[in-house]
Amino acid sequence: MKMRISTITTKNSYLFVFGTWLAIVLIGTIPFLLSGISFTDSFFESAAGFTTTGCTVLEDIESLSAPLQMYRAITHWIGGMGIVLLTAALFPLLGIGAFQLIKAETTGPEKEKITPKVAETAKILWLIYLALTAALLLLYKIGGMNWFDAIFHGLSIMSGGGISDKEDGLSFFQSDFIINTTTVFMFLTSINFALYFKLVTGRIKDIGKNSEFKVFICILLVSTVIVTLSIVPNSANIGDAISKGLFHTASFLSTTGVAVSNYEAWPAIAQGVLLFLMLIGGCSGSTAGGIKIVRITTLAKQAINEIKRIVYPRGFFNVRLNGKPGRKDIIYGTASFCFVYMFILMLLTIATSTTGFDPISSFSASIAVLGNTGLGFGAAGINSLLSDFHAPLKWLYALAMIVGRLELWTFLVLFRREYWE
Image (tube, rainbow, N blue to C red; front, top):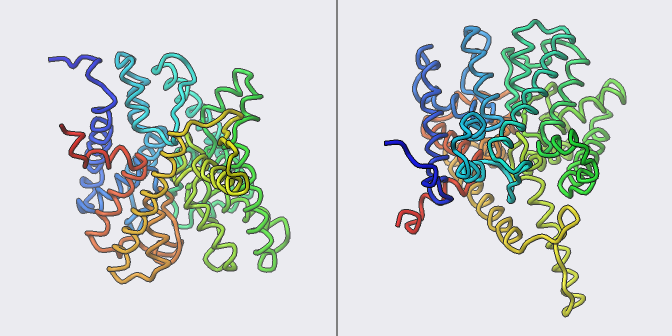
């Protein structure tokens, strides 16, 4: 019997979304299994692909067949904008219920419909995503890549996955044009895609008022300056330091997790900044992972208000987002999310450390999977092999990738008895 649209409620949308993601990841293991890869590693690769985490347990990447390589890139690209969001775009019959599915999947504390119809919103977001992807792969072709590499890396970078079919990654191409193009698009993929719609429709003032976007720009610039200045002594020239500093700042902030230098050999302050960036991630409504800048902005504003309240006990202070007073439930929800996120991160770190990894490796690896960055420090660093991880840890990390991609609540609500009553 055909399910009626009215059954897609806020409550059961969470089960639908998590079930869809789990099913897609399971189905996604088939090409890897057919290539002779174990089920554990196949599930890990599929999860890393659809969640755009981008880490891999495969040791010899270049030995993989061309179809399997392209399949890896496609899983990242599809996961970048979201499986359920794609469903809402292709099946407008979901109607009103589709927004509940999008709310359960998309990132950030507040969901926004840029058009009255949900299916139309999803289609517009996918068209923007497709247009940017086409522009990127064309630029890669102009930069000297063949069509296969241009398409592969276009899908990979646009999704925030950051994988490559080369052992040396983007460094293989030895092209400043390709490096700089990648930097620009990692920046673009970190921005809320709803802002692109506002840009196209001439609502530029709304972009200037967007609190998250302004904080994002500030974090990007300040972080780039700190990283650049710290690596100048070890760089060929100031231009080389700026290029590397901006590239890796954009890479970690966008949670793309791609590298063209051994950043683990950089000064401690540069590594500390990159670790901070991979924790907070990019903007809500983007392909980036992490906690999201809008949540950091909200909590920072609330912290300032608490200090003001000490000085002026009878004062009334509001958290203003995008020039408007923020709702109390957004503030409470943000604080709760950050607490749960850090708690899960702590549990992942402890679980990783029980397998013998040092604290820094355990912590950065946990951030890499929960925040969908895919690249960290130490055991999860640029020269490390995740294939050395124990099988139970691979399964735990695969689940963490999915939970991180769905931003915790969609998964955690299923463990509440009240949900099933």
